[in-house]
Length: 197
Image 1 (cartoon, rainbow, N blue to C red):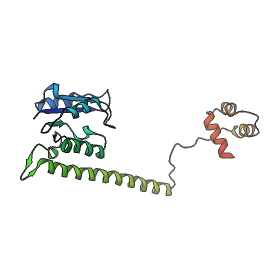
Image 2 (tube, rainbow, N blue to C red):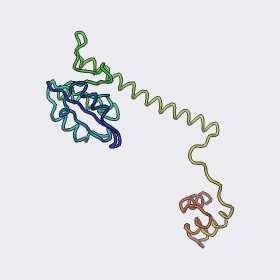
Image 3 (tube, helix red, strand yellow):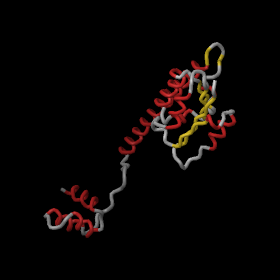
Image 4 (cartoon, rainbow, N blue to C red):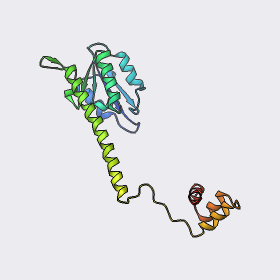
């Protein structure tokens, strides 16, 4: 059995040091620590892909936290299954030992327990996201009923807007000239003109 570490940060400005240190404290050699500095939005990550090709049955992949595998639970579950079911390797999550598949809990294997915990966490996370969206929608509806306006408030039109609107409508000036005359951007001038039609 070989022990590998995978560390990731989302941007080049973020630092990998904390995660790398955690891997070394777990006894993982530096040559066996794979790192990517890119978003978790997809799994087209060079070092991660290299690690997935390298791991074999019984190997151990150590990560600091479960979100190092991806940005949402659907992706995390896919990778979790790939590592534990397809590759038949183990996963150790330093921040959440209950997810570790390389331990045995009584007469049940660590893989079974950790899969169960992961499924529950995924369900809770997805449900919470749905509740948040629902609460936001309800809050917006209540606010609108109470007269709250959303978005950028409309600025008052300049006093001479009406004059330049009529000139534009009569095709005597362009949008650009009308906008310049009243001190608006062409897009704002045009939008306000269209509102009056």
